[in-house]
Image (cartoon, rainbow, N blue to C red; front, side, top):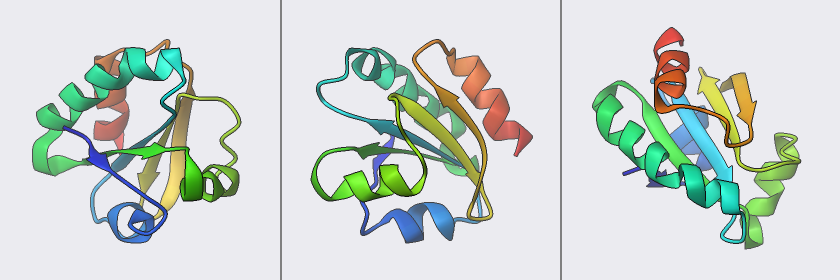
Length: 106
């Protein structure tokens, strides 16, 4: 299961992580977000301790994170390494294998 990340935990969970991190920016009203959500959770289980897979819900206080990272369309998947965005995918046209390979490349 992917971890829930908020503006309060983003620094510790994402920016200071010593592992590659995949962050899924999503919203409850977003159909494509709901479509890929089970795949994101499966990926989190598969990568185990080798990477961090988390979700940021873009409601309330977390909207500032979306603005900070230029998230204009969702779902938006950002790949972090050493506190920096290294890659991104926008939209639901992805496979679990594609996401896994991007994480492993980091």
